[in-house]
Image (cartoon, rainbow, N blue to C red; front, side, top):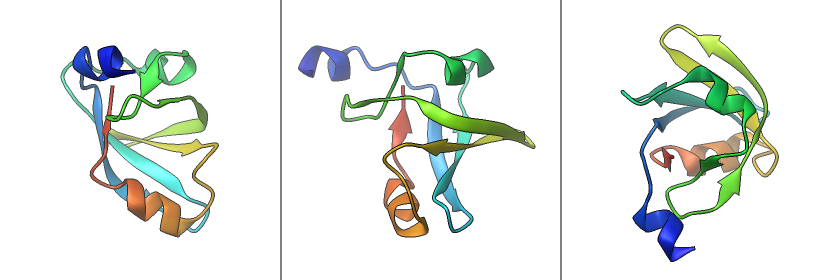
Length: 84
């Protein structure tokens, strides 16, 4: 896993929790490409892989749900995390 973190390429920041069901609002960075949300290549800044269950565009951002984030408290704990 250390190699994954060392090779981490920032593509988005988690800027906000949305709603009560634990959705996350992502602010895309310069290397953003929307189809990333449908692939198997997303990781948190600690190297943990994840795949969005659902996502939608919200202005310049994206709102998504993730399997291991099931409520607002868990979503709030992800604010400030980086996505690569």
